[in-house]
Amino acid sequence: MRDRIIFLIAIFVLARVTWGQQNQPPSMLGMDMSGHDMSNMKDMSTGAEKDSDAGAHVMRSMEGHMDMGPHMKMTAVRPAKPGDAVRAQQIADSARKASEKYVDYHAALADGFKIFHPELPQKIYHFTSPAYATEAGFRFNPEHPTSLLYEKHGDDYKLIGVMYTAPKRFDEDQLDERIPLSIAQWHEHVNFCAPPPDHRREMLAPHSQFGLRGSITTQEACDAAGGTFHPVIFNWMVHLYPFEKDQASIWSVNRQHGDAD
Image (cartoon, rainbow, N blue to C red; front, side, top):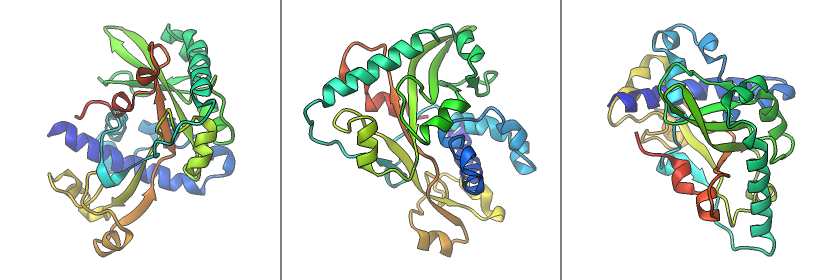
């Protein structure tokens, strides 16, 4: 129950931040929450959000992308085209080559990757590069993953994968140009109804109508409940595990979703 509460609050906080960033100048758009540039989240929280340790809640929401039904959109698996497997392998090879230098997490920190809430226990720790997150908004460079993914073992971190992002305005043809959709499935978080301020506690209820676990999935229903509807709240995301031995494991969708809290 505690993890469920944390998850719901996390999604609400992230949605508010991401929605507000739509009014930022173009140079900042690549650094929204979809890129997981969350190193300053503690400073961005105010009032009730600070009281609930919003930063910690945000961290929890990033542990795994669970099956959220109408609140998650996955790209369709396409028939394989000539060259797809080769291109996907080249991306995986580039990701492995680029991330090998970060097996020691100190190297990642030295290169500007920022870990979100290292003091709090997580399944997966996101080390995000603000520069690469911005770059991903304009072009795809497989050698520049938005985030490095680590598991923590004692006082050390074990590098297990990388995460790429793409603008939420992209259609599936554009995503296919980055990584073939016959191999990888991108996902985005959709149909989010943020509750009105005086109903925030309702998100904590087991059968809430608000949030990414809520029953509300349309603009009309959200308006009727007094909420604020966000058709999409983050950019496209995809995880890649370049140190695995076979293509299915490298692009594992089940692993990308993570274990349910």
